[in-house]
Length: 46
Image (cartoon, rainbow, N blue to C red; front, side, top):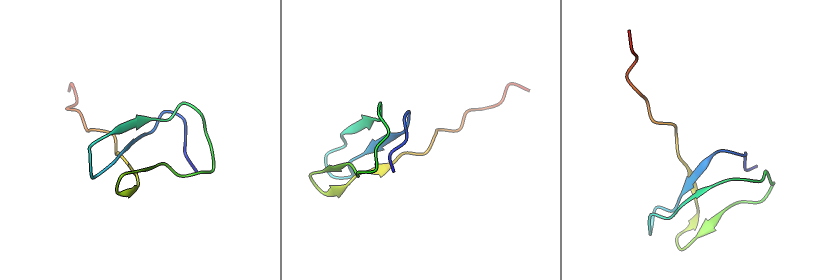
C-alpha cells in the first residue's frame, strides 16, 4: 500500500515520486517496482 507523503525512487533512471493519494497499487518504472526512500537523518541541535 502506498502512503501519502512517502517518496519512491527508480533504481534504474533515478526518477523520484511523492505520493499524494493513498492506494493499494504499486509504483513501477523502467526497471520494475520503485523502492520507498527512508527519511534522511539530521543532526540534533543539542
